[in-house]
Structures are given as C-alpha cells and as structure tokens.
Length: 277
Length: 237
Image (cartoon, rainbow over the protein chains, first blue to last red):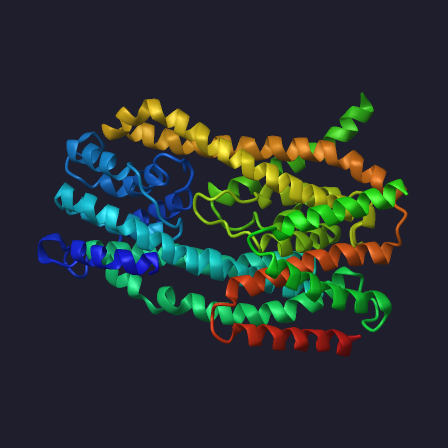
C-alpha cells in the first residue's frame, strides 16, 4: 500500500474531529508574513541532517508567524511554540510549505500543544510520498526532457537555460506558495488540500507527457550533439542502432548497474584507448 | 608568478559558481540551477564557451535523469559537478563552437566523478550539521530563536564552502588533463563524439522507460514518439 494511503486515516483522525479542528476558512495570510515565510521556505533544508531532518527548517519557516503570539519574541508562548516546531520532521521540501502554513496557524490560534504535536507527526508521511511522486519523479524529469528537447530544436544556450528555469520554477514556486496559503487556510484540516487533483493524479498525466517528450527529445538532441551529420550516413545510423540496444541492456540490468557507472567505464576506456594507442 | 595568476583567474569564478550551484541542490533555493543543463552551460559561459557547456550539460542531464534526489538517499551531486564539467568542456572551445572531443570526453568523465564525490561530501555535510546541532538541542528545546536561525545559517554556509572547495579542487585537477587529452586524441572525432552521445542517450532512454513504464499507456507513447522524433530528424536533414 502506498505510504500516502497508510498515513491518510491517521491524518484524518487527527484533524477532522471537532476538538482538533481550526475554523474552516481562516483569515488570509497577511502579505508581508506570507512573503517572509515563503522566502524562508526556500531555505527549509538549510540545516538538513540525519537526526532531526528538516525539523529545524520548519521552526525557521514558522518563526515569523509566531511573533504574533502574546508577549512577542520574549514571551513564553513564542518560545514554547518555536521549540515544538524545531524537532524532528520529514517531508518533501516543496510540500513542507503546506505543513508550515498549517502549523503556523495552529500555533497562532494557540491550539493545544499535544494536538499540534500529533498533527505534526501525522503529516510527515503523506507530505513526503506525495511530493516525491509529484516533483522528483514527475515534474523534474518532465522539465529536464523539455530542456533536452529545446536543445534538440537548436535553441541557444541562453534560451535552453531560461526555458528550463522558467518552466520548472512556475511549478516549483507555485507549489510552495499554494502549500503555504492552503496550509494557513485549512489549518489542522489540511488533509483536504492533500486531496487536490494535481497532487493525486498529476504524476500520472505528467508521466504520459514525459514519455512523449522523451521520445521526441532524444533523437533530436542526439542528432544535434553529434554535430548534425546527415542522418542516413554511417555514424548517425550506428548511433540509432546502438543507443536503443544499450538502453535495453540498461533496463535489463536495473538494480545491478546504474547507467552513469556504465558510461564512466565506457568513457574511461575510450579516453585511454585514444590517448595511449 | 604571472603564469600562476593566469591559471587562478578562471579558477575563482568557477569555484564560486560551483559553490552557489552546489548550494541549490538541497539547501537554498532548489530552483534547479543545479541541473546539469544549467550548471554546465553557466560553467562554460563563465569561460567564454556557452555552447560547449550546453552540449556537455545536455550529456550530463541525460545521466542525471536516472538519479532522483529522493529524501535521505545518497545520490550524485550534479550541481557543482556540472559547473566543473562545463568549465572543462570549454578547454579549447570558442564562443559558439562545440567542445573539442577530447575535452568533451574528459568533461563528462569529470562530471560523473565529481558528482559521485559530491554525493559523498553531502553525506559528510549532513553529519557535520548533526554534530554541530547536538550540543545545541537544549537551546532548541528552550525555543531559542538564535539557535534555530544559527543552525540554518551554519548549514547553508557550510554547503556553500563545500561546493566552492569541491568545484575549485576538481577544476584544478581536470583542466590540465583535458588540455593534455585534447592534444593527444587520436580516435576519429565524429566516431568519438558518437560513442559519448550514444552512451549517455541510452541512459536517458532507459531512465525514461524505468521512471514511467508503470503508468498505463506510456510504453506505447514512448515508442511511438521515439519513431516520430527519428522521422523529424530524417525529414529535417
């Protein structure tokens, strides 16, 4: 069973019952606070380590909101809330913004600490698995393939780089901002936001588009990278035969040999042969 | 002395760029300037050969498609590595030219090796942060703002330094090798380029297949679009 599904009941149980819930629609996140928290979310993994993972980063991102607590920076509620938010936490860095928004609102509304802690624990699994599937396994490879396709179409270095960065970051920054706003909006009911169709079905659709992009991009990019020789001459024909054969071999070797290690060996042999002979 | 200075002139921007791009991999801001196609193009552009950097970056991007940067797993650090590779690919190249084949081969090799070492340095970096945080856990439990912010700043600064050192060191080692290999390269240039490109493209094709084959219909879509892409190449010739 996917991790998302395993964690979903726990998350629902922790957030849906009335004593745990924030009001359905909270006030909108003030602009300055939103900008400050969003900027900090870009550095959420700044102190990532094997003991508390992204925990300190969550505390760092939530901190501007905690200043609204009674007593401000020197108040006991501020210190207690910051301590609660700076312990172990694990999530995908982009979707962690959803947790940051929800936890910030819960702290500002001074929800009982034990409920915040349970909610925080329940969020880890879903935010990790949904984010990994959507961003690392779907959106990033899709944008990479677009960049390779642009290279294959003969775009300039500036065009390829800007095209890739623009496309990727529309999704990246959009997801972080959406997460922060929806986390704040839904508070402890944030599980409803995780049911968003893009999070649930996005990877499947992006995967299909990526398959098309990959198929189109590779022949065009290979043709340009080998110097744009006539496609029916011996070397391009050889590449057209050798590439799929090697790809099939790599798929069959899955788990036993990573592709970059194979390329390392091939290129080392080529360099040695060419220089030493 | 003048020669030493001349050698250091490209080293400084390459090392600094490797630091900034290495920082992007995990710590800040993960905007993917650390993807090889960006990092290597910038590395090449810094030394006056953006086209060579782009070609090298595309080759490394094909390899990077295979390794997903998931969570706590150890994966190659392509950010600093691609800057070094792009800078090495610029050896002997001009503004709008493709990389020389010897430099191209060395650049891709150096990119892979640096990415592998970079992955190891990331593990060390994470362990160092944990070691730095351990004596401060009481302050964290007391809700100390300075400790929370200090840990973030420490982690990011250390990551920047890691990238600068890795990039600078690898560039220093690789640049003379690329110059030497360029000078002594004997295999036919077109054939050599074909071997490099075919091997990285095969990794990309296998990665696309492995990443998406579980989604219904994608295998057929991939094969059909591969045929269409090949036809486009033939028709465009």
